[in-house]
Image (tube, rainbow, N blue to C red):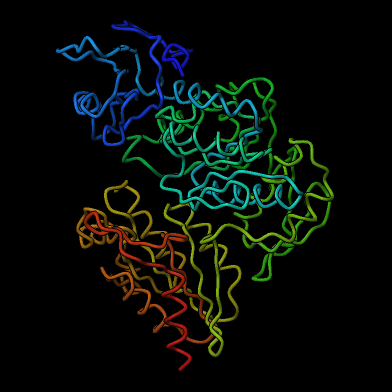
Length: 487
């Protein structure tokens, strides 16, 4: 493809060289650059792509897109100076892969909690209806039934457009994708034509990146502000920022709710380990998913399906037969002692509160709630004591342990969490820097009909310590501990 065609819609400040050059690939990682490539120098949080312009040229790049021109200009290279390289990257990726979103219906999901469940349920629902669908999620990406590993909630702009292009070639009719606040802020989803957008909720998270909660809200809202009039936007009316999210959107507005009048109105009739018995727009239905938070997720999915032109009865019928996403309120029961073990991705105060509040309503008789919870390293430290406070308030026993310590000292993470423990709740808390031992400890403390919650990692099959990813699966460890208990 000619460079000048890839540069369509780019705000260019200056050009040095020939834009009629043929480009065979675009890259943001200089290590992946090959002959005939265009290298886009993007400024990241920790790395500035401008520092890798020369290595990219040495590897064969024939065009450079950057915000600041290098001091030494190679006459054999074309340099494109742009206002914002991350914006340029988004448009260039879209152009290079022939604007795939124009050929497919894409629905994005954003919010602090529920993104994965909503996107996954939509993929399962529309696949069950006979449509070939794509899924872009935290757990994994799917092209039809083919699974691809996911490295980020929302991939970088090049990987994302390449993935969408593959979905078009595989004849996908719909794509359901998570849109993280990082992806919105870094312009990764810019240029994508969305058929619809869903807002789940917004609570305390990612303040290590966004710095303030107001900025976190602003970033989420900015995506809805860009939606066209041809799209639909669905928001949670029961979230106090639900209305704000759709305030300035041109898209058709819809709301879902359990508590107030809304386009998609639900009411919980019964909530047990067997599932949710609800009414959805006056239609009585039983779902396999558990908990009030999943009632909201189901309403969002139902609303999106209706907005995409599906009929009410078949949608509810199929939804009632579906399981949720892996690692989301994923529970097992020990055979002999009937101890309930629950694995959940809850890694924010609100998500943990929702899961524990649900468990509290579900527990039988005098069964204890024993919670294993932690926080990740190199992430928002302000939520750590809040997570601990929530765990203490809703549990009978709590064991603090890190999720993925990354480069941080696990003991420092635990110390931050312990700041949320009061004199009154201290007696029910303990800490263990070894996550496997923490899970083992929780199971050993459990008696018949107790509930053990292992929160924070959910679907993840690894634990990252000092830059190394070790095999680690909360659910497998929990099952192994149950097996030992039965012997």
